[in-house]
Length: 331
Ligand code: CP
Image (cartoon, rainbow, N blue to C red; front, side):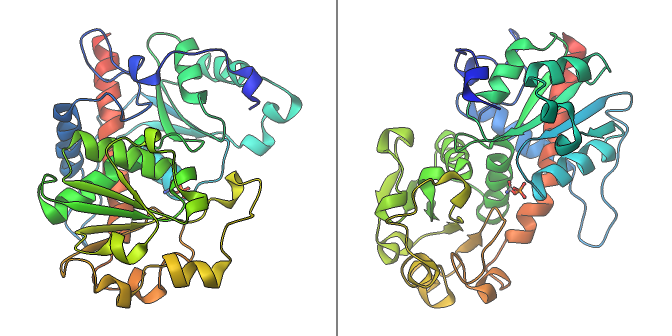
C-alpha cells in the first residue's frame, strides 16, 4: 500500500493489549512484559509433539475464521499460520492478493471491511510499508484481532517469539547468553523483533555484526553492541543468527559487497564458528542464501537449529492465535 494511505497512528505497543492486559492484537514485541512472553513460550511448548509423532491438534478455535493477507512473499510465516489455524480447528481464508480487488485500486481498509463483513475474526497481515498492521488494528471492529506477520523492516513479532523459544530450548535461560546477529541488520525486521524480545528476557549481550553500509542506527536497537568485524562478533558467542541481505528494501546497492566478498567477510562457516562457544547454536530465519551468508554444510550440520525454528513457528502461531481468541471471548 502507499504510505499516504496510512494516517498518523499511535505507537503499536499501545494498541495491542485490552484494558485488562490481555493480548488483543500482536503488532510488536516492544512493550510486552516478560511474564506475557514466558506464558506464550510455555503455551507454544504445549503445541509441540515429539519428533515422528503427529502434530498436536485441538478444537480450541472451532468456529473462528482466520484471514491470511500477505502483501509480500512468504513461505514459512504464511504456511505456518495456515497450519496453526487449521490444527486449532479454525477456518482459513488465504487471500490471493494478486487476484484481489487491491489490483483494481481498492484501498486496504476497504479490503479489510469487505472481509470483516464475511465474519473473519483474526487478520494475519504482512506488508512492505511500515505502520500497516497498526493502521488496520485502529480501524477494525472491536471483536477483531490483527497479527503482524512481517512489517517492512520494522517488526516481525511471531518470528521473534519462535527465535526466543528455540534459544530457550537449547540454552534454558537468557541472562548469561551472548547472542550474535550477523548480516543486513539495518533492513531486518527479524533482527529488530529478536532484539526487542531478547532485551525483555534479559539477554546478557547482544552483538549486531554487519558491513558498515548495512549497520542499524544505534538508537533503533538500544543496548545492542554494533560491530563490523565478524571474528570479534563471534568470539565466545552462544547463539549465532545469520540474516540475508534484503535486496528488495535497498534502492542503492553501492557499498554492499558482492556475494563472494560478502561470504569472505560476513558469511558464517564451520571455520569461523570455531571462535564461538563450543556448544553454540546456529540460527537463520530463512529464506537462506547458501554460500553467501551461511556455509551450506553449516546450515545442515549439528549446530544448526534452523529446521527447529520452522517447527517452532507453527507452535508459536498456535499459541498466539489461542491467546487472542481467548481475549476475544473476554471482550
Ligand atoms: N522467516 C520468514 O519470515 O520467512 P518467510 O518470508 O518465508 O515467511
